[in-house]
Image (cartoon, rainbow, N blue to C red):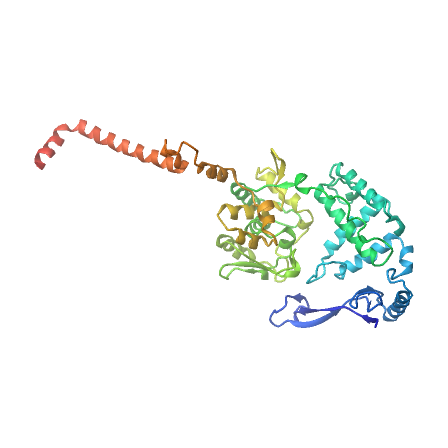
Length: 465
């Protein structure tokens, strides 16, 4: 039996501020929030719980549902809306965006709808694909469409990358970005196949790309001595950049390195997120503000907590600790302080250039933990990654000195028994040489004393007898 439903979800609100808070917050009030649009379910020929977006007005939604049921009963089960094939793809894209914002159109079961930024990015990629391939109407998504999409993506692979706002459609693509565009196109087609005569697997046969062989923006670890110069230089700076003073920037870089929080997460931190008196001190971020929508509780090194205590005293309650427009161009803010500290932003390596952008602070955080001997499981937890391969393969960078020390412990075939010194590390060899030099120096002093006072030594020897 077909029926109208209006999806809803539960949220918890702070009665004092009226703002949404995490579940279980003391004193929070439970409220029910409803979707703006009505949906129909129980349509003949479809699973009982299959939902169809209708309209925001209930009476209009009733009429649409009646029409939808009539079409399904007449054998049009695979064409829910006969008028959908006549609508331009641009209008379908608007409905696609609305469904994404409501958390629909995804195979995985989400705990919360995607953020506005995520929805905007997916829709932007689909729009560029439609414009670049000249897909205007539903009939354009025919068997020739995959070849057009392949030519479009490969053509953009050969173009230079343009990092200017508003010129995204003209910019070239890396293999990773091309994979994202292909994924967005497949997602849109799967969504559209339930509303118009389009094959859901239209783009599934399209060959993918190899992002690991074509990374355009590899990040590097910012070495400890470089980070120390960066923080000190920012702290001494008298310039205010995009709303941040020199001290603000110094503490921002320090917290970014000490917690591994991303730029967007740091921009959302308030004074209440810092629990300096906890054991250990922590920085807590609600799930609605993190990338994976899970609550984050990152421990702070005691030295950083000690510096944060006086810094946070004068910060207003409930407001971002680091306000301003820096989040829009975080890399430009960092590059100014890097230049002032004489720390290179770009370093040429045998594998191509590597960059010290703002996200490189997160790489440096995990690399420093790995160098300190932190285990794989702890690294994954602190990185908040779902897969340890991401943590180890992409975010941790082995230091040359550590690699050299590891190779120094290698036992050479045939040389171990012939020369036992090959078993020793460089540090052990240097200590052995130092001890021998100290003994030689002590013996030399003893000999000099004997030469200078031979009679006194003889008298002492006779007195012993």
